[in-house]
Every structure is written in structure tokens, then in C-alpha cells.
Length: 247
Image 1 (tube, rainbow, N blue to C red):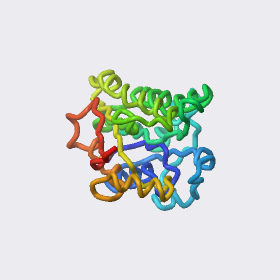
Image 2: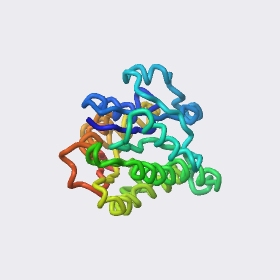
Image 3: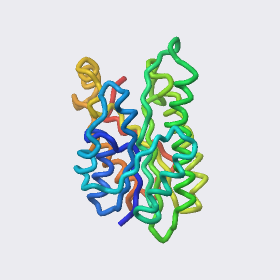
């Protein structure tokens, strides 16, 4: 039984909730993180956080805006206080932002970089600092998007920051390999979390060999494997779990 922190658990339809559910189901003690004000700014809106947590059996929860430079370390400390030394970190949260080249602003670039890329590194740093090998093998799972597989010209701030996460994965993995910690990155491909309108949903479904989007539970299955005993030889990798998505 491990101890885990999963970030970005704010919507019942989200990948974060699916990951937390999968880890809880295998007996891990899980702390979940959310920042609902970000969802409230997006077209899909914020979910009922009490309902999100209730559906997971009310695990320990920490709300934190990871745009702050001190927030990642404080979040990891709070999670450790709740369940003891952490053996697993899943960095699932993200700041979403549209923006073509002509629309990009320095402010949005900085916000996406802070929340998506900088926080991922600082969370990993804090996780490693508190890691106790006695808790079992350590695992960090980061999340990227598909910008390393094809262009995302309409989401430049998001693509830039998520591309940084994917690129730094191998470096972070090497930095902690001697500690017995693996670091990997998941690209879940088009995943049905309720964010897309009907036109885009249909367009992308047609580009999937199975004729449907990937599900949050499928992404959670990849995370469960990477943080379980059968993937200890896998580190520094980006897992493109896109379901054969044809761009």
C-alpha cells in the first residue's frame, strides 16, 4: 500500500478523479489537490467539489493555486502531514489557455509556464526531498499534451508549457534515479472529460481508430501501471497513450 498525492482533482469527469479512484481502489492512501477557481474561468465551469470528493470516499484534500512559487512545496508538506511520507506523485493539474500567435500575451505565457511547467518541477523537488525509501519504490508521473506529436497552433501558451514538462522528464528521471524513484510522463491523447463542444468532439472521434475519445479511466490505467510494481524498469519515458489518434 502506497501513499500518493494527485494534483488537479476538481471534476468528476476529469483524469485526476479517475487516477485518484484507481489508486484508492488498489489500497493506496491518497491526498487530492484542486484549484476550482481555474475551472470556473473555463467554458466547462467548476464542478461541485463536495460531490467530487464524496464520490472518492472523502480523501484528504488540499486546495492550492500552484501559480505561487511557494505553493508546490507547501502542498507536498500538507499531503505528507495527512498520510505520511509520499511514495507517489501524480502531477495531473493544468492551466488551460487558448491563444494563436497573434493573440499571445506575456502574462498568459508566464501563467501557463508557472502552473504547468514550473510547478511540475517544484512539486517533484519537494516530493524527492521528503521521500523515504521505507515507504516503497518511489514514482512520479507527469502529464503532457500532444504538442511533441503535432502542432497546437491555437493553444500556444498551453503547448509551450506542456512541451517543457515533456522535455524535462528524462532529465528529472536521471536526477533521481539513484534514489530509487522513477519519473515518467503521460500523453493521454484526446480524452473525454467534457470540455469539447459537439463539433470538435465529433471531429476528433472520427480521427480515433475506435471511433471514440479515450476515457479518463484509460489514462488512469496507464498511471496505475507506471506507479505499480510492473513498471520499475521504465523511467524517463513519455507514454503516448493516444489510442492511435490520427492528426
